[in-house]
Each structure stands twice: as C-alpha cells, then as structure tokens.
Length: 380
Ligand SMILES: *Cc1c(COP(=O)(O)O)cnc(C)c1O
Image (cartoon, rainbow, N blue to C red; front, side, top):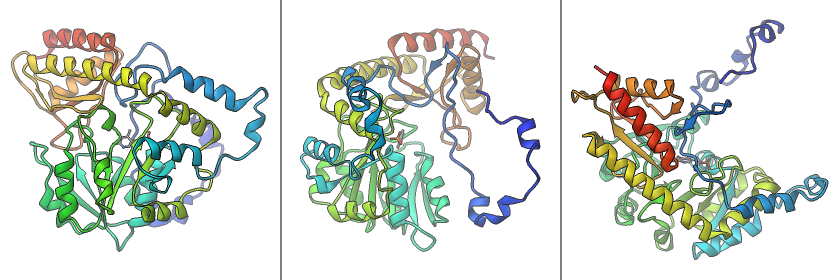
C-alpha cells in the first residue's frame, strides 16, 4: 500500500505555487477516497464490493479475440457510441438503443449527469449516508448541493427529497453502505412529488428483489444507472450504463468523451452481458452467502440492516453488549491485523458504529466469523 512518490522525487522539483493557478473550488476540493487496494497477496479483501468469483470465461475469450494476434486492432479507435453494446443492453431491458448510454464505469455516467444537470445555479441532491462520490462530483463542478439526511430507520424521506429544490437528485437503490433497497412503488412516489430529474443508481440491483426499470416507460424524468463492476466481476474493465428517455441520453451524449469506452471494454462487456446463465449462478451464490452471513451477525445480537446488495452493514457489539464507533473501529483494526479488509465509515454518526463487509466466498466469510470470535474474546 505504498505510493510511488518518494521524498527525493518531490525535492528534485523547484518550488512553485501551482495550486494558486487552479480554480479556487478545485484548490479546496476534497477528493473521493477509494477503498484500499492492497497489492501484496494474502488479503481477504471485503472492502470495495468486488465480486469474489471470476467473470464469465467468455469475457477472457472475447478480449483475446479483440486483441488479435499482434494487438493490431488496438491501432483503431473503438466504436464511438458503443453501438453493439447499447443494442444488447436495450434488448435485455426491453428498451431501444436510444434509451441507453454506455460509460467508462457508472462513475463516468454519474459525472456526466452532474455536468449536464448541475452547477452553481442548479443544485444536485443526494442522501446521506449514500454513495460518497456524488458530493465530490458536484464539488468538482462548483455545483450547489442539497443534502437530505436519512434517520436510523433508513426509510426513504420522500417529502424532503420532493422539496429539496434539487434539479437532479441521486438516489442509490439498494443503498450503499446500508444495503437497504427501495421498491418501485416508493421510487414512483418520489417521481410523483419531486419535480426534477431522479437518478436511481442501481449498481447493486442484480442482488436485489426488485428494480425500477419498468418505471422508465411512464416517467421521462427517471434515469437508471447500472455497472458491470459488481455482479459481473468486471470492476477492472470499467463499464457502466444509463437507461433513460432518449432526450436525456442525447444531452449526456453531447458531453461525454467521443471514445469513452475502450475496444476491450466494449468486447468484454458484450461477452459478459450475453452470458446470463453464468451470472445467474454467481449472483445466487453471493445472495446465499450474504443471507447466511447477515443471519450470523444477527445471531450475535448485532443490529444488521436487511441487505439487498453484495455487502452487509452491521453494528458490532462486544461480548458485554457494547456498541458504538470505538467498538466498530476496534473490530476493523483487529480484522486488519489478520489481513481481513472491510470498510469503516467514521465520518457520519449513522455509519460510525457500523462496519460494511463485502460478501466474499463462503471461505472468506468463515475467516471473518472466526476472527470475530477471537476479537470477542479480547475486546473489553
Ligand atoms: C461501485 C458503485 C458505483 C461505481 O461503479 P463503477 O461502474 O465501477 O464506476 C456506482 N454507484 C454505486 C452506489 C457503487 O457502489
């Protein structure tokens, strides 16, 4: 987990206050903090909701085919609109190509949405806690933000969203880091009361009981974003997509990079999305492991939100029944010492007493449970 930057390398450059040349809001920007990505082997990595299983074997085959013998195809730019991929995605959701935009991960799509619909005079709204990239994307555009707070019930505060004054509102369903999913009926209530653009970030929808795609037919202000990073085990390939009214897709198309999805990403994503039988198996396994792990947390007496995602958000308690931020940190650090990496979010009162554990293999979860048993012996 070391960076390449060395003190010697920095000292070799002359002093210059280059930050003063940047736009003031960028000079003050707090960048998004991604989860740790350890490079040395031996970690049980349950901190960034990646898939513990490999992608469909058809993906590697498609990538080899795309590269060709000498990588000759890479001389050429990719399909600028990802047309074949758009067509496949549209068909799978019962939509048309004009309803689909493909991005370099769904983060690319979220960034486009903030750039098109947000700014200093057009507020973007989001919930807290939810995906912590939204406020960063808004801050990069010097955009106004409307923050709507959940309470501990994590029920959707429909009226507060409706009256938030946001031009575009970002709603994660199932939510991160809680795993709590919202039904199409709840999302439709928001669409009926909130007058702006509603972006439903469905990064975890493949693990959920429901999703909101059917609402697109009667709600032109709805945008749904999806990713291949989680359920499709392709976080390293960078592919995500938006489903929306053609007019919204057209606006996003004006702003995106002309070649925002590489040849390899398009080829790999096509192969992955075509192999629905493989992924049905992967998702079923992850859901079964998730439900067993969540049940084990509940049996320990730990409050655990019902998860519809590929992670479990749970409030650890010591053997004497104590919970809270210090207890969550204690378990986080204990697990870290045993090379088990989970996620701890100390910056918000509703998340600080909890840990978010990505669902790995049954073996990974056994390692977490055994280490937790050992921690329970040591904790005060
Ligand atoms: C992981 C995640 C994303 C990012 O997906 P990429 O396609 O990898 O950029 C977007 N939204 C939420 C809520 C996520 O958890």
